[in-house]
Amino acid sequence: MQGLSDLFRIIRNSVIITIVVSVLAIIINFIHPNRIPLVAKQPYEIYVPCPDTTGEVKEIDTKEFFSLSGESAVIDARIREEFEKWHFGGAVNIPYDFLAPVCPLKIKEIIAMKKKYVIVYGDGEEPDSGKELAKEIAGKGVRNVYYLRGGIKNLGR
Image 1 (spheres, rainbow, N blue to C red):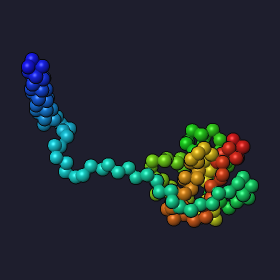
Image 2: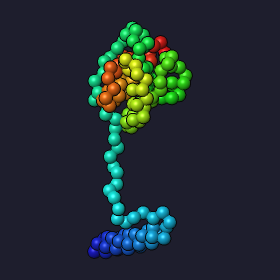
Image 3: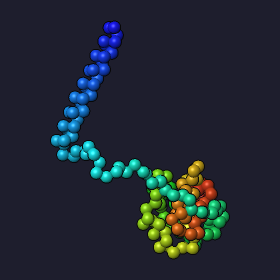
Image 4: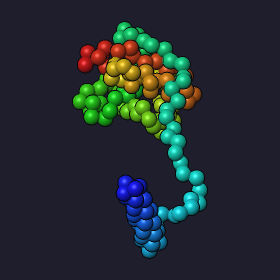
């Protein structure tokens, strides 16, 4: 019987503490200048749009890269720090983020280059940032998009 009495006392005290803390939190929230609304005025955004990488691209090797690079917009998909260490001459840096889509202005910049082809190279890892960026760019309507198999590693870096 003593054990049952202790259990009820623990439950009672837990309920009292929960109520006191909840009331205190509501009072503090009410007087705080940046209060959190108790009822949301609009639905919370819980969706994180990942890049759409469904565009069709063609894989090319180093030989094809060099033969097409003169007529191509060359895009480096690596992070800025890596790009600044070394990049192919004339390449534009558009770092690929696996969780965030490419800015629409970047797509417009690629189109404004008015090149016959777009060649993307990345880090050459698996998954390759260059391949993924190329598929995203192609999925947004850019045509003649290629990616360099093996990424920067195949350019001698």
